[in-house]
Image 1 (spheres, one colour):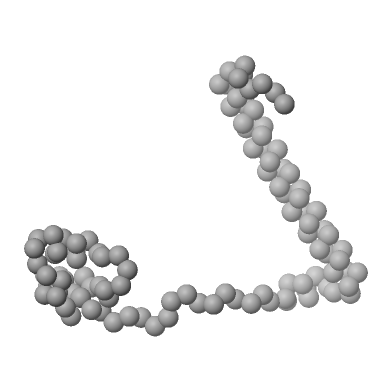
Image 2: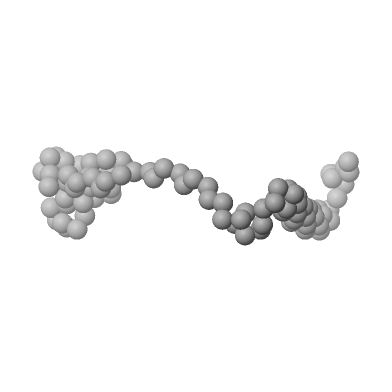
Length: 107
C-alpha cells in the first residue's frame, strides 16, 4: 500500500482518475464474464438466449391503493387540497400558524 500523505493534490487527482477508470473497467469485465457464464449454463441446459429473455420475474406488489378522499380544502384557493394523511402541505401549516382551526378548512 502506498503512503498517500506524500502525494500532492495533483498526483492524488491523477490517481483518482486512474482508480475510477480501473473500477469501471473491472465492473464491465465482471458483468461480461457473468453474462458469458449465464449463457454457458443456459446452453448446457438446452435453453436458447431467446428463452432466457422470455423468463418473467414476478412484479412487486403495488404500493398504495385507492385514492383517499379530500378532507381539507384551502378556502382561499380551492385547488389546494389535502387528504389529512401524510405531511401537512404549506398552506395547512400557514393556515394553522395564522391562528385558524383546521376544521374551518374541512371539505
